[in-house]
Amino acid sequence: MPITPKPNSALLIVGHGSTENPDSSTPYFDHAEEIRRRGLFKEVHCCFWKEEPSMREAWYLTDCTDIYVVPDFISEGYFTQDVIPRELDLTGPTTTVRGKTFHYCLPVGVHPSMTGLILRRAKEVAPDVDPATTTLIITGHGTGLNQNSTKAIRDQVDLILASSAGYAHVTDAYMEEQPFIAKWDELAPTENVVVVPFFISDGLHSFQDIPVLLGIEPEVGPAASQREIFRQNPHLLRSKTLYYSSAIGTERHLADVILDQIEDFDKELKVNG
Amino acid sequence: MSPTAFLAQSLAAGIHRIGQIEIRAVGSGFQLFHADDLALVDQPDHGLTVHRDPESARDISTYAEDDTYRFTKGQTNLKRGWIMLLDSLEDTRRALDHFYPAALGLAAAQREGTLQIETLREKLNRQTGMYRFARNISDAGAQQLVQKVCGPAHQCAKWILWTLDANTPLDDSEASRFRGIPGNLTENEAIPLVCREACNHFVAECRKVSKAEHAAS
Image 1 (cartoon, rainbow over the protein chains, first blue to last red):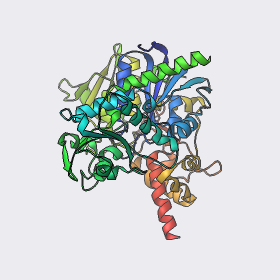
Image 2: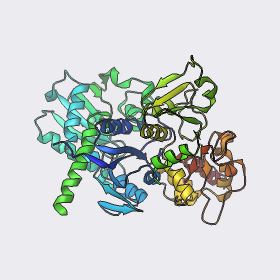
Image 3: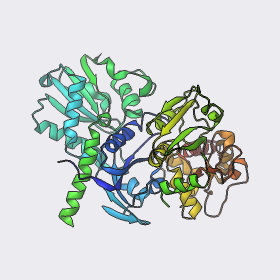
């Protein structure tokens, strides 16, 4: 069901951003533009941890006094539970800060509709490969700062295993936590391996760091806007055929997931209200 | 005051510049272009690339002329050679939000005295991960860094409002004296770009200085 238009509200999409990689914030602005184009909100803005406008500047961004905040993050974790509430002065699902009311939704990555996006991305990158002979690896960062950071990926693994997608094996893997993505060949019992990075942007991690860990690149290379790494699939490495996709967040349907989270927030509010 | 109302009021008062961008009302619409292209705009064959979508502002402002990434939008290396023809005040404000994120709302709040300013120590103490070490920078190191990184001499057009901490203002320098308006315009002609918190580039530089100080100690 399409979201009810909110002509007096603003949508604030919150992302990480980067001071070094210009591609990092592109998906957030793409998602904002896609939603703006649909005319559902009076205003649609982005704010960031590492780019301008900062989260603390977000209060000054909008004419509206009613603001939906959706973290364009892939998991509930350190940023969504600690950093964003602290930076925006949020104390609960709905908080009024100096006359503006903020509704804090769950991050996009934990919404069940992400499963369809992962499967779509996996199919796009390896269209002629039979899932029955393929391992699907969903890879993320992993961090000791918050144990919830990996939960969204593990949940997606469970959802895909329970689905009719038919992959021979599905697993999670991380840059900085076990199981390590650097050992992807040991994690995959099949010849074909599809790796989908569970990141929002093709920034430093998914485009530059993970290709090195996979063995696709000998060293960290230039930013995504200056390369075409994803079009070189498949990669014949470590006696396997590896397909590496672009980050899940670059899927244009992620804009729908942002709207799904707002719709769920409103439903929950009505149930609890 | 809302950002859009502030823009409308500023334009009505004769203000025509923000950062490096000239704003001109034409009929019911608006033109935005690089201030250094002022002499070209009215020539019939101005050679400027015409943009009509406010979202184009993001592409125009991402890279400098030499293709370097403009990691902070206050940098005075905005590309020339373009003009935006926009239909409404709202579209103009959207474009300006890409060129100078939140600048209108920040300037409005600053003028009204309601802008919440964050000291450098508050900013550094909130950093985590690899940037946590930035908080160890000495006061002297931070003061020197302002003069090495900020201000128009280092390509930043913002008016620094923050202090080191509640009791320590910035040392007097070109950077600390700059009032957020490039060129020789006054506050009656331009909206100042204000800096309510140290940018992430400055934080990254603090980390480098902090590590160097630690290594030297």
